[in-house]
Length: 311
Image 1 (cartoon, one colour):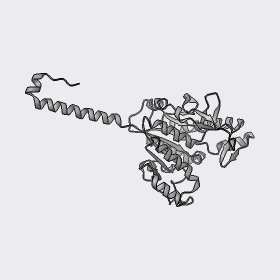
Image 2 (cartoon, one colour):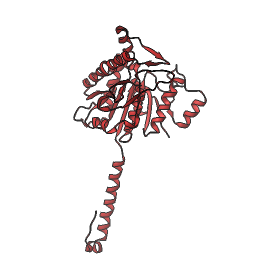
Image 3 (cartoon, one colour):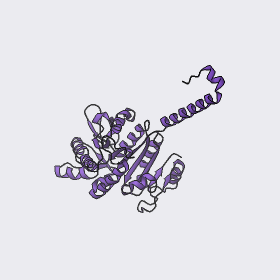
Image 4 (tube, helix red, strand yellow):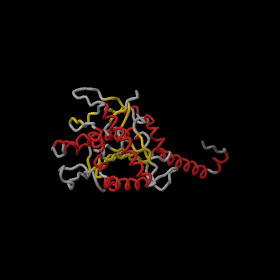
């Protein structure tokens, strides 16, 4: 509130008007700052990257440069906030073979029985997650490994049995993800590294698709941040020819996506990922990027891969 004496108003009108003008400008500037959200990257790395030690090491080095090598307290070196979600790769299958646990798949999706949920929890949330954490810590990144059960970060429900019983597989309960819990980790200088395991709230762990986890976390965090969702895997982006990495489609929006589908120019395996990308955009995510893990910096800057927006 601004107050002036009556004599000031009558005898110093120009000064009073200047003060009012400056106050209005200050209020507008402060309002603009409040409206601007801090940027957050939710990045998912594919199983093929996790399986390849050299590719994973290279990716994590690029990732550490993106976030500025933050340690606690945050270094203030210009790095961005990020959440890293990793898939499981083939490590669980290989370890399962040595333990006599057979891997079963239907349409490329793992059937998770009682023995398998123990196996994937051990491998995804244990071995893979902690190897990633250790490498990031060596790169001065204060990474912390989590699953959906930790801090109730990702509540889920066991997938209902329809034509196929997938076993202990989880479907994320989007509306129950607490963005403030995630923000608490980020604001205290941590980089969450998420293994694809959730829980049902009744003591049961659930195997959950890593792409879905990345999408749902990105959607939930869009209420607090300007979220950029990045899918980094072995391909260079969305391709016109699935066997030719040079046929990258650099930009996709709703109208061009519909045209590409109508003309049959997007191979079937990419359609679910793109449908999920637009679902994320429609739920508040600013931008979705799909591309090669080895090109993370170029992918983030829009110089490589496929950028997906609603405009």
